[in-house]
Image (cartoon, rainbow, N blue to C red; front, top):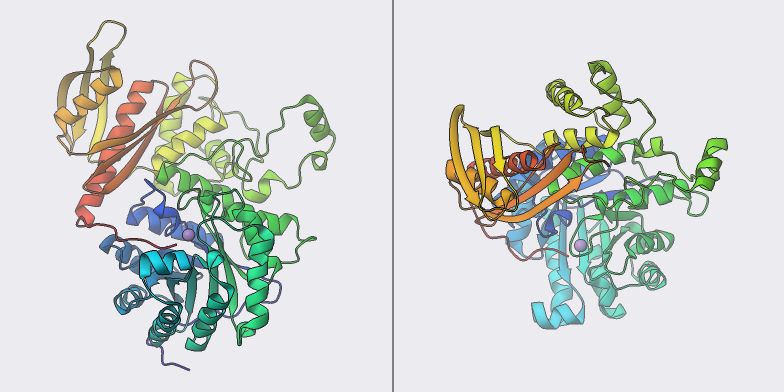
Length: 528
Ligand code: MN
């Protein structure tokens, strides 16, 4: 037994229980453009804890001061879930990670090194023997700081089986409690992935005393299937991300792995501790803060996941839901209410509607959302569920509002140049500008730049019609980048150009917030 300086390890799982390890804030945040602010990460951590996720990977502390702070503050906030930080095999990484986790009730250091010949030869320039030695040294060092240590073999699935066995054995001997076998490049087939676990569990001394973990990428659309194959072969932890975000094609989606285990408990006799009614709320929050929309036909959380269109299906559904539904929308926090909302709907009905849609807002956020709902109901006769979702997501993605849109008038059409007359409120004072542009959106953004000069570059401008019809709200997402910092803003309005102006201003506000709180710094080469 080593002598930990802080934090205790979570108890071993009950038989039949799979540990859910969420990496939305680490691997998920590595998706290009998906950066989250510390405040957003804190809020997400609370949502994940409410959902009873077992382990929250909160970041990669040595990567940046922002990541360090996020891990440190989440470690101080979360009491039910284990809070995990990522570290490469070096002493500096591990020490920094241990420091970030100092305040954790349950902390975990997750350290990794590449094991495959491709990575050994081209990235590490180390022999298999060197790698085995580094595994032992890194895990031993982490165990000096904390009880709960996870070790990962980056690119495990392309590693020679004998080398992988030696690395896993070294990690177990050095005191790792969890052994993660990532399919880093999303290359494995389910039976191949399962075979790796069976081989390790049968042949590595001490394998029966640790938890094996899956970490699958979706490059071939197999991340969830591979995760389940891993569990079938003996893994007892799954590493997943909300909405399946992550490097390239993303990670195994939390909601899909969890619901596959729940719905098909007859086929694979394992449970998770996840309270699945929180899934929709987590999905919507992650979509709002990253600006990554969820595809309509996405399993579990897509807007069509529980929609029945074909007449024969609808007919069956009316007779009995089990005809075409393998799970109830309420099980994942969707639907359960057909209340039509309009301008006569009161605050109470509005709150009930939000609950049915998977939102649980605090009093201030509720009041603000209700005010905006009333404004919308004045402009639009029928307010649909999707209108309300758009309205609340805007509020969730909005930071401190130093800049606000007061008034906008735009001259658009075939005769250029298009022109925008804009009034903003900046730190409480009104300011006006008129600008022209190459199209009305460009004119609006130029007018914002004339009032609030900035160096940010527009990285994404996206418009969705929230519902059908010409009076539908337009939901606009804007992503800005300045000095490597990325901020996203969203807004919905029945006027597309007003929504564009508000989304741009929201992104600017989020950018200002980030600027105040962290010095710019380059992100180092990241995890698996
Ligand atoms: Mn990964």
